[in-house]
Structure formats: structure tokens, C-alpha cells
Image (tube, rainbow, N blue to C red):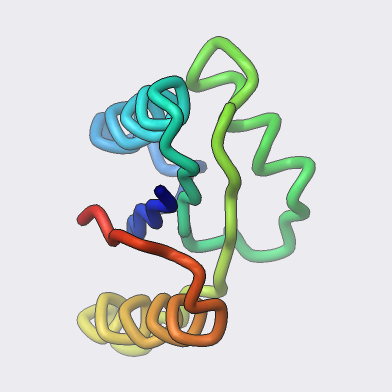
Length: 102
């Protein structure tokens, strides 16, 4: 089974829910569910940097896959809309997931 877990908060953010999301993804993967976390990429960051941040927050190497997208911010309120549009582009282009956990 393949699961995609979209989240609209960057891993560089210090909100508590990002830790919970990372731990959920690791738990899904430990239970033989192929998990992909889709998160916004911080501006000018590389995949290796994002993985290092996740390792630091989790305290271990992430077991799940990570896909990033760029989050556009126009007038603050439209961020969620553009995040949803970016996620659906990823989701529908790949079409390889069985479930979407939100």
C-alpha cells in the first residue's frame, strides 16, 4: 500500500505539529506502508538540507520518502490555496498512491 501525506508547514518551522507529522510518517513506514511526505520547501534549500533538518527533529534518519514543492505567498492568506494547487499537481502527475492521509 502506498500512502501520501501532504502537509502545508515547512520542516524549518518550529510548530509542534511538524514533529507529530514526522513521527506519523516514520510509524506508517515501520508498519510496511510505503509513505511519502509532501511538504513545502524552504526558499533556497536543497533536499540534503531538508533531510538533515528532519533527522535533527526526529532524532533518527527518516524512513519515509520526502517530496517538496515551492510554497507561494501572496498576501499571506492565499498560501494555503497555492499549497493545495502544488500538492494536487504532484499527486495527479504521479498517480502512484493508494491513499492520501490529511
